[in-house]
Length: 246
Image (cartoon, rainbow, N blue to C red; front, side, top):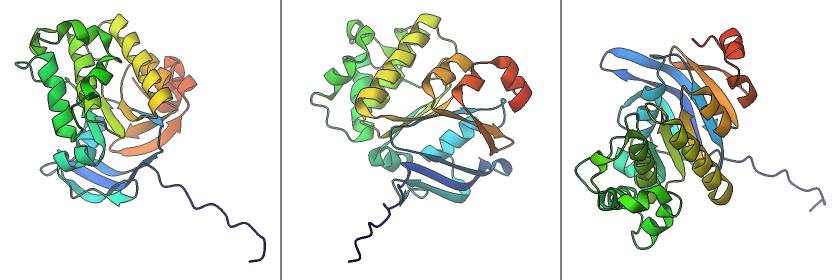
């Protein structure tokens, strides 16, 4: 040994995406998306409607097949895995529109989250309800009977019941009241601080995405074209000028 310390090995991102292509049938939507998300990082994605934001999350989760490119979770290639296998590997997904089970009770929805994510149910639901106290009063109520905001809380809680390492979160503020938007911000910030949750967030609400994200990626015409800090995203005029958002 010569007494010189070796440089530390390069850290492997929790989620790594390289040259990802996807679409619907013969209609291409993603044209080579590349991004990396570190452990415990909150990363936002902004873009016009139709630029591929939801398509990106659906492809990452395996609901749409990638036609080219790679997706890795902690260095493990997962592009060939089913959505269920990706959930068991540590990926959680809260889709646009929430997609809870409306005929099942709140408690049954949470149990389904444990099942889909492969997490043991014992103690897990009670732990998650500690983060979402509003849901405790509705455990026996059908999910479809909740308000839109309460359904969004349920969708997020159900996802977290599966103990994901990273959550793909698609337009969570769409159609819900401001008080619950603030509740979601506070809950996700708490989980990020105390549990190191990683989040990839698609959102049009600039205050929401700026409040949560460490950095924000710009998606245009199916590719990542730039990155802005949260303070830029808070200013609509700056977004219009530098990013070209409507």
